[in-house]
Length: 313
Length: 249
Ligand SMILES: Cc1cc2nc3c(=O)[nH]c(=O)nc-3n(C[C@H](O)[C@H](O)[C@H](O)COP(=O)(O)OP(=O)(O)OC[C@H]3O[C@@H](n4cnc5c(N)ncnc54)[C@H](O)[C@@H]3O)c2cc1C
Ligand SMILES: Nc1ncnc2c1ncn2[C@@H]1O[C@H](COP(=O)(O)O)[C@@H](O)[C@H]1O
Image (cartoon, rainbow over the protein chains, first blue to last red):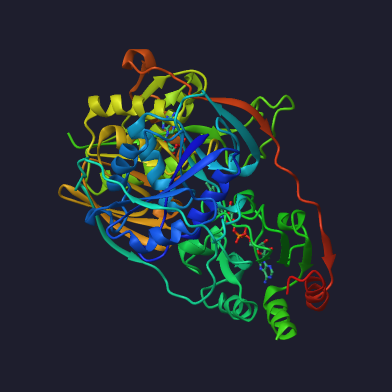
């Protein structure tokens, strides 16, 4: 038996799909016993959703008004106080988990494995390094507690159908007040979420302006696709930061990825390695993106994109 | 004295095409260009700008690693850092060890702010800043794209999956940088000469009483599976037809 604790990511109302992916990662291990921890001000709704995930054995709730909105400095002491019985403590490789889990590891003096692609045994893990240009297998000492973040593109979300018991947990730790939430600004749109969309269309520097991106939004809406961007496009202000795909942006695994006016730098390709089918549209036939594209089309995006839109309408 | 401590990690330059050694023991680093981790350049640039605005009196850079790392510390001094600390350590330095060593330097230097990169582009761990903040029991603000200091607090805008989040943290604190925080300056030739005279202190890890413990064994490195090279289509019509045939549209 390997006892695994998963720290749930949520927005107070809904459990993030990243948690269901952590469950799949944990479940890949034979003999895993999976507990999901929901830290919240009011955990009822989210705990209920976690309990329904197939493969979850137990849901723990830790309620405290200080847990909303989630701050790593506030959550970490609570998570580490509950960590004792677990061999593995996992969180998602999203900005939530990447921020929180190393703080937990620091408090516990435990090693962390970031971006787990495969849990090969309770002590053996595979993860990408050098922007995915190498895959590294690491091994911990048996008996050492390991903290991990789970690479989202490597796992399918666990499905519903479970009915795990929900228990209230409590810890007596002092929570810091040195870190205060001020605000979060998220651009609202009705498009699918970049990290879970089955189709993604991304634009690069070639789009030329925020206005230029409109042709991508228009096509994306026809296809029910999410829209992403290269770093160059985000840096130039053509698209907001949450749209960045790549080593330092989002790592995604859609069925279809269309790279439009993106050269295909290594740091960008890292983000799309797990896409099922990659399409590249670029006016430079020598662009490195063509080396990974399943379908390559050389030409001017400003002609091609509207044409595709007509053809799919 | 008001002081900012900046972490500098020596990494394989981001332009280098990484190759895994045939025996799987690592990646090829012989004869390969090494640089300051790009996120650490951003960290240093931010510290220098704070100093230029009068927000700090001194910028100290620090690295934990073998003797070779001094080259990157010299580059950091040429960029404008006042002083460098080299914690000498061999072999694999896990984030916990790097953070413990940095904590010792913090205890000595009493900085107002510690700025690290959000991740090192070699191990892609993205841990050290948060581990350090935990050990130090101070605030962390990771993935910073904007940093404003006033009095005893910092207001930090963070790049998160949802968009931009703003936190207020009491100082001292640990900040980790994202790409859009700033654009690092170029090093000028005369500055490289001047940097040779700036103080660089070497401290063995053992002297700081930090154990170079490695908790994760590196079993093997493998090249990632290669994608099959695909086909060229001649126009939008052919592309749409191909995607429809595969059930993708
Ligand atoms: C530490 C680090 C981390 C990074 N992280 C990321 C990351 O997470 N994500 C990321 O994307 N990048 C990242 N980068 C940046 C990366 O190296 C590239 O600079 C970036 O991806 C380039 O973006 P681009 O392809 O849009 O721009 P460019 O490289 O400028 O490419 C534009 C492309 O558009 C084509 N084009 C121009 N006009 C047209 C037209 N009319 N029709 C069709 N095609 C046209 C050109 O042929 C060219 O290939 C990172 C870099 C560093 C150093
Ligand atoms: N050996 C080191 N010496 C100095 N700083 C380091 C070291 N390792 C990590 N850091 C800092 O921590 C950041 C994150 O590194 P990592 O956790 O390895 O991804 C880096 O960008 C550096 O600022």
